[in-house]
Length: 332
Ligand code: NAD
Ligand code: LMR
Image (cartoon, rainbow, N blue to C red; front, side):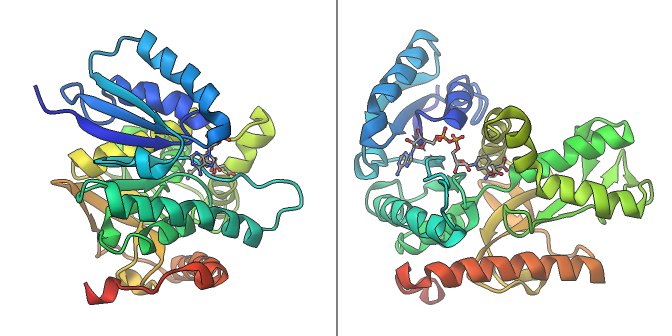
């Protein structure tokens, strides 16, 4: 039997975690041969609710769960962790501007970055799910100067999975028969779901769909799917977000089996994207790390879409720049 790994989940008493935790505990993230110790982190006001969630986890008697600990701060909750699922974030409240939301979350992710830097395992992999995920991830990474920026990701896998699901439905194929989809950029309505290199059962997707359906129906649908779910469900996506978080971390840790997956990662300047922002790229994962797929063709339309979402991320970065510690990544 393998040694247990430590997994921290923040926002552990919230909606997404109510799906995520039980899947992790069942071995759906790291495999059914990988024992886990769950380190659940919440704000002090949510500790009673968290206790209830922990009781339910205990009541499932999952054989892989070798321990559950509850924490009201990340410096305790992140001790020795190998994986961090950062779900907890400040939601947008009435009258709050995007810049206010960025600032409110900057405080949370600065503290969590410092905690990862100080107490996590040196090989920790951290996935930011809480919105605005890409810029929260930037703040997190910049506050963890002893860890490599490639140890942090922002989640765009939900947008990727949504693209596979909706496209599979349109083409009448199983989503697993589709490869080569990329969601570029920010997890926001500027994201660019790119089907130009996608295949379904080995055949080019773009040759099988109508351009106007792609540009005027599919693209805005993916970009605004989060809002569409909120409208119908009255709550933001939770089970699908949990599944996407699990898919992202599983592929990152265990490999994507040669398939392209979309991951919000630190830009190294590939495809002309500005360095130093967390931007979603096409990646293949192997041996516990990701590589950007570098040779995809991007047409003029794609380039303008990629620029737009890059611009938004640069604006978000500018809005929190005064809160970011100096970038030491270049010297590493
Ligand atoms: P929720 O409100 O049900 O739960 C969030 C939980 O986070 C709450 O229990 C809250 O107490 C906790 N929390 C807040 N600040 C915290 C902190 N500093 N430390 C620890 N815990 C903290 O929300 P949810 O539906 O679970 O969604 C969580 C986040 O995920 C939101 O920001 C949402 O917008 C985002 N989200 C992202 C994606 C994506 O694709 N990237 C998809 C869906 C939702
Ligand atoms: C989603 O994509 O479902 C989440 O980011 C929630 C939202 O506000 O869109």
